Length: 297
Image (tube, rainbow, N blue to C red; front, side, top):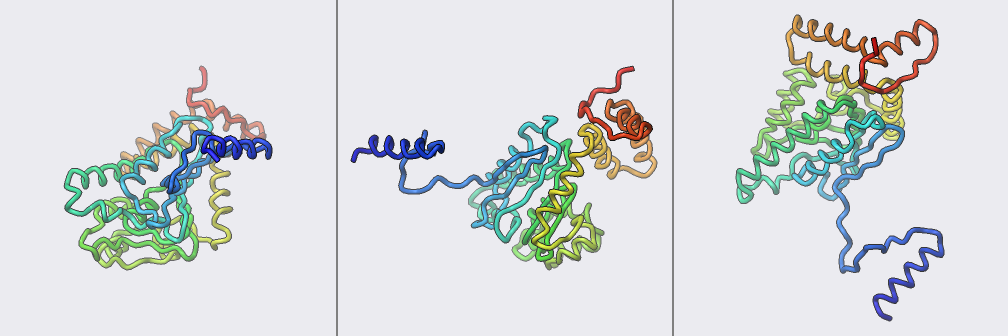
């Protein structure tokens, strides 16, 4: 049977079954197409990004980082997007950088690109206007632990562990230390960095690396529940609040209060700022516009 006849017959079978043929535009080859490094879906305001390379322990290779960056930035200003959840396939959330990309044969220029891209992704998580939730079910080490620390909220299962073991392979986790050192007490961060010893999910909760710890069976619902509560709020109000929180955290007390006071006034000028107050006074549910424009005078 000729190849063209085979294609027509198989395509016809899919049409008869009422399914769209997967063969349109496909090519026959001896090997399957590689799976994407990240998978995204978006429903009801929630974008789920899944690290999708479990065979390589979801290592944050340059390609993985670039894919993750694209997934985060796509339609980031759309009012339809309200929260991002980052999770992973397999027993390892992420093992950190792909060490095969960090050998001397790749050269310093490639090394610089890897760490620059990683830093861009980590700062992006805090700079985007919607909250980002890490949903962790397994091991998060080195830059994988950095990814968790960089998210606004982190929900982990009881079996999850966190570590910065770079010192044990001769590469101190200096860039993960930026995020982790801002998430946990200094002496906890230093012990993690100097020894590479993993900490449990409950210790991670105790020290502020994660927001809550749940059973594996409850992980999906817990993350979804947080996402639903975020989606119930006004997008521009949440965006303003998130940006201000991260900015004031790097300031001294007096400067932080001055900034926050100005932002409270700006918040009151938003359409949704006034709608929320009117709704409270009128004892009704607010009807958010999700528009960033100020209330007309």
